[in-house]
Amino acid sequence: DAKTTQPNSMESNEEEPVHLPCNHSTISGTDYIHWYRQLPSQGPEYVIHGLTSNVNNRMASLAIAEDRKSSTLILHRATLRDAAVYYCILRDLTSGTYKYIFGTGTRLKVLA
Amino acid sequence: NAGVTQTPKFRVLKTGQSMTLLCAQDMNHEYMYWYRQDPGMGLRLIHYSVGEGTTAKGEVPDGYNVSRLKKQNFLLGLESAAPSQTSVYFCASSLGGGPYTEAFFGQGTRLTVV
Image (cartoon, rainbow over all chains, first blue to last red; front, side, top):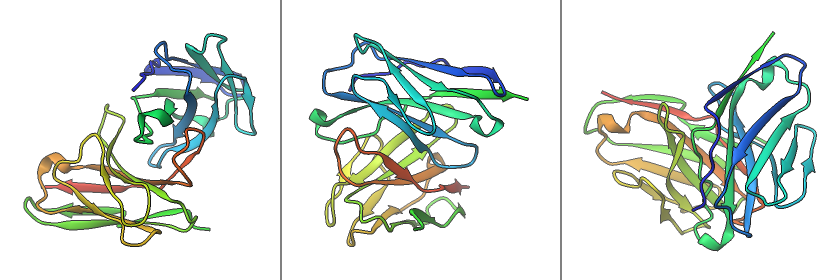
């Protein structure tokens, strides 16, 4: 399974944009890039996913490098409710196991 | 819709006792998963199911058994609990197994084995 690397923690000021990076240098052409986040004492929740093109939804934007070896989750205006652990995950159908493989993620702290 | 519901939310077991964790989803999802989360280790897949009547092993299956007799339910059993199984357990479901599908998670079960 292709692996992802994320910083352990990041800090942001409230109402400022946040860029959360993820490296996936061994990504294959069939891997989708997913982002989930886990708020304190809750289960993970889906944020966004993409394959090659940049993606936007109501929660965030996903910027994917042209070579697909890295991606960035962008929260346009961080709020205190965005404080969570953010996981970057690769989903590969060809592995045959349909797994969501979670690393240790990035703990985002939002400062008031 | 309730989404994914886990029962119970908290439990304390003595070493050697058995218990079953129940996961129920009302989204008609085919795929269901059990994860455990330990401090500093992220989530690790225990078992998963790709449809009613099917189960498969994940990364850390030892000491656990599962059953998927009904599409909406996925049960995780501990036959003889050990302190190493103290963890937070999360159930998840997804509509299919495609790499573009999203998973929905329950709120977790905090299990302590003493």
